[in-house]
Length: 352
Ligand code: NAD
Image 1 (cartoon, rainbow, N blue to C red):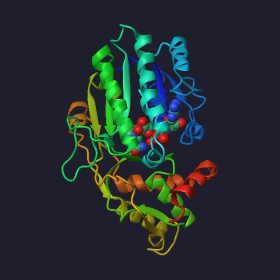
Image 2 (cartoon, protein in one colour):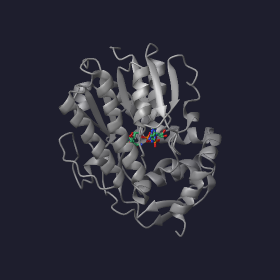
Image 3 (cartoon, protein in one colour):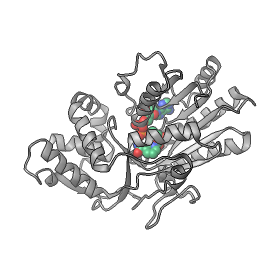
Image 4 (cartoon, protein in one colour):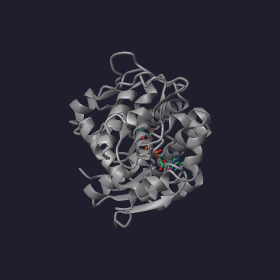
């Protein structure tokens, strides 16, 4: 079913957004995809080099916190749908300073909702507003799993900002009848992920044989999902999801951080012909992140049974592909880790 033709993607120059765009422009040639992204430190047009000249794709540099820009954009276009991924996405940055999280994640989301509400009026049947969100809104769980009915209990400023934006999206559905969709997904990994996140940070430091900072004793448990599996879920929710509904997405793939890091050390040692165990010596336990959630776990029964989704990429295979991608894209990694990222990283981990 290809009813939504003119689609606005926000945050398409980031990690997940660039995979979503690559998927849509290749699989749905009759869609017109507009990507709006203000290119923060995390937005990178190199992520979209292979699709930038596609006829069905265009990029606009713009900030979703700019209301005027959004209303002009919605006047020029006749969007059928929005897939909203633009966000400040890194927990550590939100702990240092939450202001950009408020501006983009909360105010930016409300601006987008308002733009849709004004531009779409009452003709809503085929419209969709799809918010891509995180399982971190549910907080930490010692055993069992969260699902769509679990209460929100965000613990980091990042999670609180995503929880607020989820609530606004749902409220616009209830109050104005906007056909909204939300999905809450666990940790993604894969190519093009910014190296402040655990897996690419590890890969980058192992490649440079530099210390690998690991919070606490690395006991925190995360569920990991290969980004392509998330993109397939997004495609399904977008095309087949029921307006007003939330879908939880997870990989049934829980790992302690220390085990993920050790796995990456061993993988890179073998790929780069180092003696096994060499890189594990780089592991450097640093004082824990304040309010660090011990465990996230999410139940994807609903999206599996109602929309037929399941993850296809076994973790070790996905890790191997990811590591190989970073090995093959050393220029991308070098560009992205110079300049402001370098300063951020030094400020975060100095005085270790
Ligand atoms: P990312 O940080 O890699 O990319 C975010 C993108 O948004 C960047 O391109 C950035 O330039 C853009 N952006 C930021 N502020 C903007 C603004 N004011 N106006 C326009 N563009 C702006 O993030 P990601 O990891 O790709 O995550 C995308 C979405 O998915 C986020 O909403 C995040 O909360 C959610 N999510 C991420 C994960 C994960 O593991 N990475 C898991 C679940 C949900």
